[in-house]
Image (cartoon, rainbow, N blue to C red; front, side):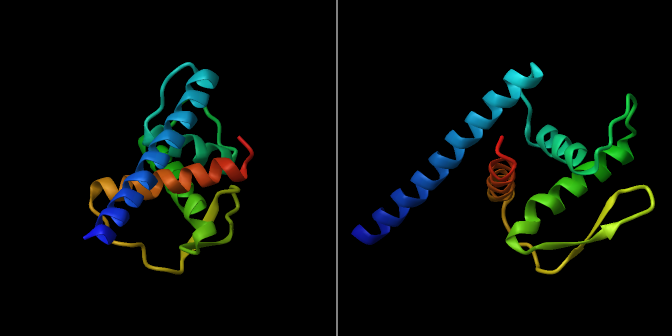
Length: 125
């Protein structure tokens, strides 16, 4: 029984640490952009960073493409995707090389947040 409590506490600590690191990132991004971003907004920013794509008007399809690039980019260091190259317009193309874990919605969001945080750490943000 004590073991179970230890693992439960360790898991809670990991989630609390993730949440605190996420709040720190949100605070930095809020300071920089003047608005608190949600996970989708952060992925959108990463997609823009990775592609260099900046435009006044961005279509829904372009936004989805930018978020796809972001997800592939943040999951690349964990071995889920590999960059195959860029197309003629400079957009990166990725190949999935490992199946993504099956998570419920909250676990999926935490998985993405953890990889987003790693991305920003690697960017020295």
